[in-house]
Amino acid sequence: MKNIFATATIKTLLLATGIATLSASNAMAFSETEFKTAVKQLVTAPTISQEQYVANAVSAWLNQDYINSLEQAEIDANRTANQQTASTFNNMLQQEPGNPLLRSYAGAAIAKSSLDKLAKGEKATALEDGTTMVEKALRLSNDSQTMHGSVPVALEVRFVAASTYLAMPKIMNRHDKGEQLLKDVIDAQQFAQIDVNFRGAVWMRAATLAEEKNRADEAKKYLNEIVKNNAPQAQKAAQLLQTLS
Image (tube, rainbow, N blue to C red; front, side, top):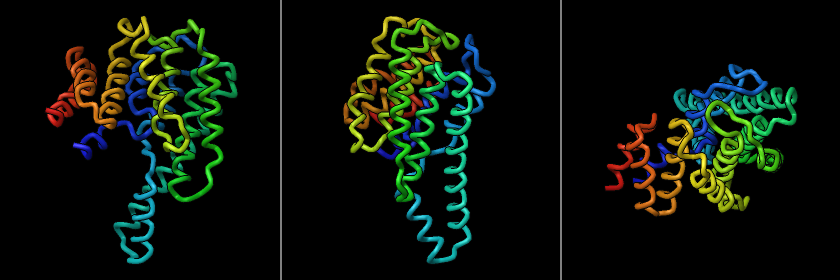
């Protein structure tokens, strides 16, 4: 069951958020096309685990194995893609430095790129820089009434922050804050009226978090909400429910 959930869960930053934001319309100043392209890059390029990086690198080096060499090349390509995504969001943020939504995504992208460096054993000082940007975005959006499509910017920023914090190494001491932010989004008064794409993404992240913490009943509750509301994640939620029954 753990392996199935590990595949479905949002180990890469913002996978769930991307499902919601890629379908949102924009009432903000930045280019929605550019924004969606950057989010798609952030969603599809996986975070590389240290185990995966080391295993492929050592195997390719020792055996001169063509297949493992290709896998290593793919890992390096993913790392490059993550760095390019961070650069894209930073460029957008420079055009609108006061935009908390862009700042949250830029910070998350920097954090994700830094996690890849940690996996390779490199220093990743930018990880703290990324989290600082996310924290500033939270402050800037705290009283915001702006909408991003049908989603309040304040809630989307909280979800980006929650997803970012929950993906960080536990030594960073952000997991508790990430869990609280996720709960805040679900408990928000506006949540029930928000587009089901976003709600489904939030419920899925809450379900995977509950499963990670061995809270099966709570995980089932969120997965059932996804199925009941026919969210885009319904098929995956139904599959995950079978693993919990």
